[in-house]
Image (cartoon, rainbow, N blue to C red; front, top):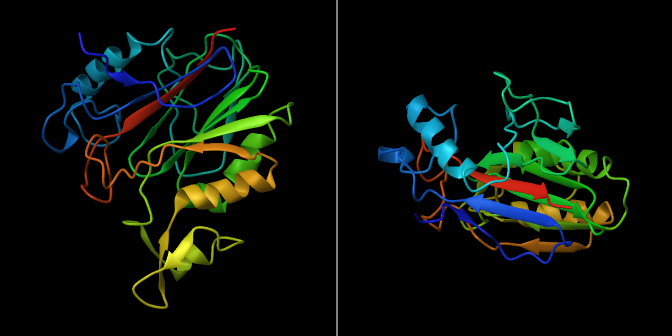
Length: 242
């Protein structure tokens, strides 16, 4: 059977595993075709569960999903924080753990997935970073969870500045102008989420940042909410092996 998950290029610490899905090799149809992992986007729930089961077969444990709300809350996952069998996933846009075998997961379709790991491989985190989360300081809140000050980051597929136009309300929500490029007029900008995230990571002392360089609106392997709505969600999965 064809592997559903992709192993991206990232020189991270030994014992850390990172995977991401695409929109390929699933069962969803229409605008959700085909490996949609989002239960909140009006796809057929039974089909989404089949897609999630397809992905889970390539992971060491059931992924710990979040109820993502474009906020800045970070959930710390311990041995008994919450169970993947729980009917209600925690409301958060980032998760952090030091536990072995815990598979952290987020879903995206234009928002920026940020993966963080300590250089000693003991601590990991995943972040769903849309413009609201970045503006509200989710990067800082995640970094604060780490005991280590030596961190590495990976920035996954997200909508690029070639497609992401924002207005002055979005621009005014940020404390710096990193990633804001000239738009069609004085009230609009093209936002580079990766550059904004990179600048925030640098402020937090994270200088080792690897970016996928993939724009979800340009690459039809991935879902893009701006290009086609409604649409599905692809996933990012992170865990420790030692």
